[in-house]
Image: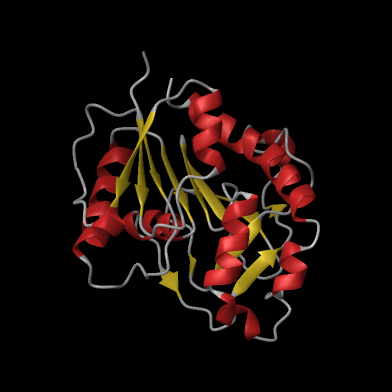
Length: 234
């Protein structure tokens, strides 16, 4: 029996979404640590098979105890070759924990923007089943550098670094886990972010247009990347 994946949620509206569905469909148990409800960060790694760190509106540089605790946990997990996945804020936490630099860009990247492989996809198992470019969902300002020893995986017109891998771990600035309900909720909750006129910020109408088709295509590519990640759990 595979040990559970431990998922760290930082805000209530950024739960595991489709990642939870994918894990369930592949018989991978998981548990959610709700940091947003004041739960402390468990440092134990003996009873889990992998770690996932979700997004959030806070910054890696914020003086929060759980931020420091999560970075320490990431370092320990990577050192023990336990697969880690970071999404948005979670990816920035991974970069910072591994010695990378987090920088703030006043121009946010929001909406459906294409990413392309930053390395030869034919020679890389994380990429070989993916199309030449695909369109994930974005909602972020900060970005990360690639830590020493890691490999940049994707880039976009709006951000030089969109994802990196280190052994069996992956950090992604973008969102593969969003569902129709999550996107609609974010547009409602954070609509003020969409008032900025910039080529990297879509308006609410652009984001919602043909949303069901966009989510369907997103999850097809999520299956490939999540599928590669869970190989490390076994």
